[in-house]
Image (cartoon, rainbow, N blue to C red; front, side, top):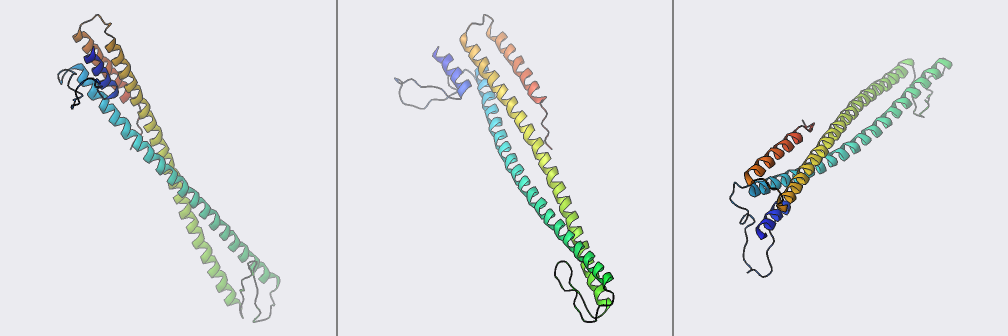
Length: 229
């Protein structure tokens, strides 16, 4: 009975209890579990492997969440910068339009007089060439801002794509965790049933039936979509 209890503890909790009245000495968890090829030893090894996979999936999930938060923050910064550049482009376009309308309304303006746009920046000169030069400079600056806005829009699109990819990876990691937890619960429940000793069949038949059940559980876990690249 003690040997069966140790086997169940080793498989279910990866440890073996030690009686209080026993001598204080080192105990091997695999000592009373039978030979290396026995069912208890294989179940313990399978349980340890599943625990390792669960820990690794938890770490990957935490990393994916941190990357998702970083991508969201970067996307918000890019959107704010894009809005600021768009407002600046609109202000420049309004200034150019105001300058053109002012020149059309006052064609006989005295030479040397300074004209101001809606932004308050003095444009003006002694002739039309200076005004055209200033307008050309403003238009070039507007074109540069437009190109910058396009680049920012592309960066925002890439950020949104990365966020979508990270969300898919997060869902895949959650599905993997659910599958692993189901496997561990199945193994622990099967271990408890094996420890009851109420199965009238022989040990070889029980081993064969358990192996087939574990194989079916493994195939069902592999059918879970991972979604990883």
